[in-house]
Image (cartoon, rainbow, N blue to C red; front, side):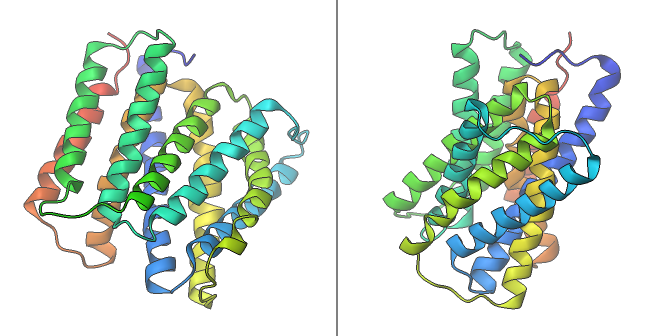
Length: 288
């Protein structure tokens, strides 16, 4: 179980959380660029992303000179399967879902699974963290819930639900990791052949240079290094706080779209962003 945050740790953990959530949001932007703008097949993008992340992490493992992480353990296999489920489910879901409703399903499922697991473990969840979770999730609904009549593709919704359950599992598995870098490298290495097995059932897309570069950056930087940082943070925070923090990712993604992709800045975005970030701020201090 994660230890309580001491007062001097709160600022440091807040900065690390912000950096990690920014990396997660960058993954969404890069995925959108690679698949939507550069025409890559989602599974091709996922395979390159995992391969690049594995290469980056194993290069860092070799450079540090410490013992290599073990590959054949229940935790490693569980981490690889969870990461694979997320990668494949996420990729397939965006064949039919738009970004907004997909993100709502993904992070809503993550929130429900992590809080449900915490309740099942009989963790003590402070009232302010419950309040922060409700406010943050409400802001996410304001931001991403469709305003007009819209048929929800069942296949895409199921795929994104699987991705959310898998990522929640990956997050929960990371709570007891003593070696964040080594465990992340092992997870990516074991994940790669599982992702490659899904390539034959996917349509071939364009392997343009910009698309491949985008997938490689998403894998090596925002996925590989971002996930290793996430595994470093997780043992230091309660699992419920980990779930709440991830609700900021869709808000950051939309904000990045405004800044980088010239998407419109609306009053709805501003209100929702304030609710989500305010809810996270309420939930963050773990000490009385």
